Length: 303
Ligand SMILES: [Zn+2]
Ligand SMILES: [Zn+2]
Figure 1 (cartoon, helix red, strand yellow):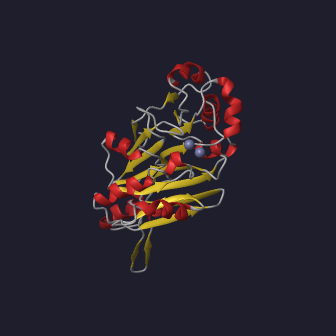
Figure 2 (cartoon, rainbow, N blue to C red; figure 1 turned 135 degrees about the horizontal axis):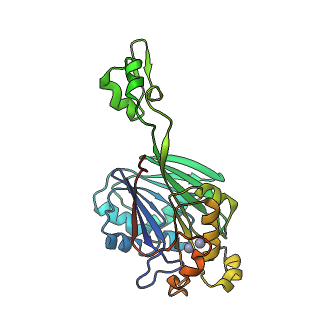
Figure 3 (cartoon, rainbow, N blue to C red; figure 1 turned 135 degrees about the vertical axis):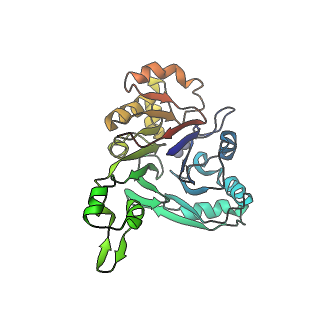
């Protein structure tokens, strides 16, 4: 099971009752965060999720509203006596930017590992998460992220019996291990059927719509996408500042054939995003106006 929380839904500045846009996932005891602007740790605290198991932090880009909350979070993780290494993923310049912020959080009881992405798209596998970073179109280098939980094929008892694989190895093979034995190697593909549908979530903020976003988000169970502006006449502003309107995000969701869209990264001037719900649902029906702390548990599909 994959737990998802949209910690905040604001763009540019945190507001009373609206924290900055940030994403957190929990899977198999390991947490992953994307973006942490000012106040994100308060949003985590409000949600009641723990800081200690945050093993991965991804950054879309280095505008303050997506990263300025980092020093505080690192200190809180340190105070939680975390000692395991923390992996950070982000566009080129990650280590330089984080080191600059670390001037005010110099001593931490855990190591930080950096993965800087510089290709148009890149895949990283960590703790059961398959993370695809893909470049988007903002006024500085910015990436979207797709998080996938893969699901292996069904175990075939008949195949295992046919090959006379000792039963003591079955569960290890089921987990994808290869097991050498005298005279050969048992591999999981001997006993597993074709991979089954996993879970896929795409998070994308601070960008104009692009073909690549629709491609990466394709068939996502959940697509979290920025909608900086709701008023239709703000399209010129969206183009100028490299953001999206609600309708552009909904069009992307439709093109990508996702199951559900959550809008986020609202402009501070947008006081009641829900007033535009009907209008945006004309383009993509399963649009949800993201709210701070909105959570969902995603499971593998029943067969
Ligand atoms: Zn932003
Ligand atoms: Zn930005």
